[in-house]
Image: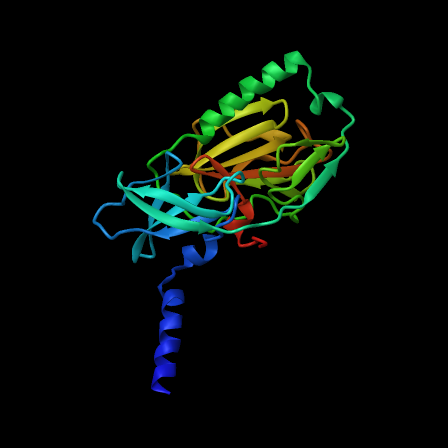
Length: 273
């Protein structure tokens, strides 16, 4: 009996050692998030993954943790972060199946753009890539995010997408079904670091929550913020629309960590394994 009790205690310890953020966010699959316990020290350890800086916070006053975004392109298996410039810390990435989505568009330019539109797309992609790569020192106000709109989830993250039968990049965000004009709220406090009206994304806002954690909201009908604005949690960003490559009004919401697009459903407690 004593041996059994000791065994049960040992099995319970890891779960007790895990804080709320680890339980919420640790979904180590392609397109997911890995939460890693870090060595104890007075100052936050410096962590890099794929040569990019990683969000580090102290979890519930207990321990430093790294919150690592895993790109969709990563294969299941062993990955490593580098701590304090010289210490390798390994973690395992599991597998996840993403289903297909087939969409019919009336505008063929949104499937096979001509040369002028391709040049525009390349310029816009470079601008947005620079925004995703920003890493500010601010701490995120919260990591259990609020939903940016009141509406049901529609297209999930990671779908393999086919437009008019032609495969394109996987779905890099989470869609909410909502009527045009529905207010969009900041899921966490942040600074507006990019505003644009893009070929694919339409009217778009990038919000920097801190330490490489960035939200992107697109297909808006109207933008209610200006570049450089500090938006409080719950503050208005814009309104739902159908601008850019969209078949109807909805909000497309991206979440990026260390320049990796990850499943926003993780941050609102709606992740599906």
